Length: 363
Image (tube, rainbow, N blue to C red; front, side):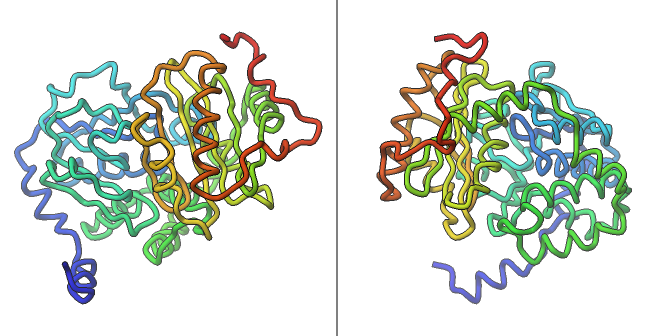
């Protein structure tokens, strides 16, 4: 077992970014995967790595993602910054000789890198997976609060100028991923945050932070509030059919602001798949392990201290089918956290669970 002093020394060493780049000198086509339904941290990290490849290797990169960019803030980020994205459905990974995966890891179930495919670069801040060792460039730092922090350090160490658009992307990523440095942020996030402030385009940042949303967004909020159940200090809500997959994370973040909530579990289904999001108060710091425990072998789950996500393997195309699975997961979460299963009450006293009667919902 590595001694504490050896571990400290290892962490103090800088990642050999120049050496890793030199190994890729002869590559000609770069493909950078974000995780599916990418969030600001994944998008900013991928965009930043593309700049590293272009500046040092002279390579243009294709940034690819599975799923959709659904959350209004995430769409506003892509649109306002002009980040060029390609759906994985429109490309063949075999046509690229440099493959990178950002803010995710191989075979975790939340990215579209083909199972078993060659991978050259893995950069992430989630707990390491054995499959990531296939990459010769494997930089996984679960002690950090954001993957963007890692890529920001690359640019700084390589002395590559960070333009206002990229600075705004990094800054927005750090804000959203750490909830304004209050969720799992470290000294490195704080350093990056302060270094980026004078570089940010604040007009762009405002448009990204306060996007307009469609009427359907408010319908989803209404459905969430009326359907939310309280089990001790757990809030659980089944949203039924989703307009986009990361709506579950958006609602979970919102409901965690309830003053009695320590944990929030949110679920919904989109295009045949069931998505889950778990949020925890900073005092809990076990969202990842809880999600993996309750999902078990029924899906792919991951996360860390205060936030986690999962996708179930079972095909789900109706709210009723998801309701059966969700009740099982809620009961298990209540059991492992010693909370009362019931439910005890609705979040809104006059609320009713109306997700089964949503417009166009299959039953």
